[in-house]
Amino acid sequence: MFPITTRRSRGARSLTVSAPVGVRRLTRVVETDAHEGPVYVAGEDALYFTTQRPDVAIKRLALDGGRFPLGPGRIRTIRGAANMANGMALGVEGRLVVCEQGTLWRPAAITRVDRATGSAETLVDQWLGLRLNSPNDVVVKRDGTIWFTDPSYGHLQGFRPPPQVGDHVYRYDPRSGALAVVADGFDKPNGLAFSPDEDVLYVGDNGRPHHIVAFDVVGGGRLARRRVLAASTPEHPDGLAVDAAGRLYVSAADGVRILDTGGDQIGLIAVPGAVNFTFGGAGGDILFVTADDAIWAAVLDAAGPPRAPQVGSATHDASRCPGLAAGRG
Image 1 (cartoon, rainbow, N blue to C red):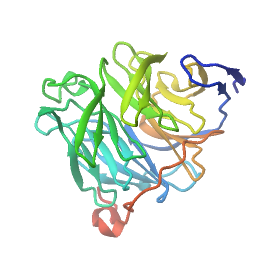
Image 2: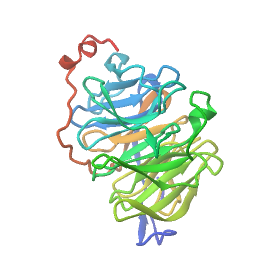
Image 3: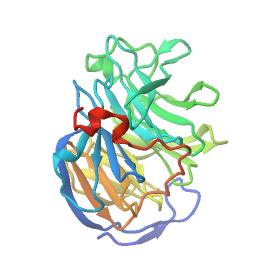
Image 4: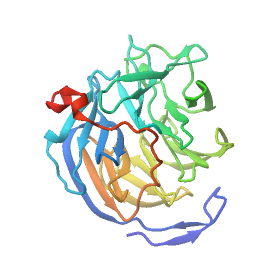
């Protein structure tokens, strides 16, 4: 355990209490190809995730409360040939919002995927007539706007054409169809997360700086007062998440580091190879971690932010997708 400290954090607007986060249990949930995009759906007690390249798929793990480990038979493919899908989030209407990195032949895009059928709808695939690079991670704000990072990793890794735009952070408004750059000046923007009250946006740059920057969210749609919050390990950070107390969870070479709002490390969940993670479980106190070859669960003395209510949520119904009902991908 880590000691409780009380101080004024760097750049914070109010007094910060850095409390310990206890890990009550850390266990491997299932051995499987699980790279990115973990999304927990409370109504199903299920975890959605994306697999590794080259044959990227969106898959669903049927959980069983806090009972671990689980067998691979509880995993079903929701969408195969998923256009290099990477980060995902849950939209306010209940569908998955997916970062499709694209290929040399298929455009990169932000899509909306039906959880039951796997059918996809393209939301946006260009900015000012220029193609996106390879969208990496995404968060959905409570107002329904979609915020995502778009690094040029796809070109560097040989599966996307040369970039037409910079490595930016975007905000997309599904109601108006407007796409705007809200932050630039990154090497390779990757994971991102809002503070619980959505007045701060955290962005990880795992290019040359390998650091985390924080922005104030102004008027709900603009970013201001950029500052470096903390450094990470080379090739990190990747995934970012926050808990209900505002602490930041950051992937690093030694696992998932826990930071206070001033950027100081106050804990570590030792899952080497951790890529991304999300809070879930009935009490929101289980951090599900994708680590390429397995999914892990850390049961914590902390919980994720309150879940946003879903409007017209899609539900997983195997009868609507015979391939899933029969266990086929």
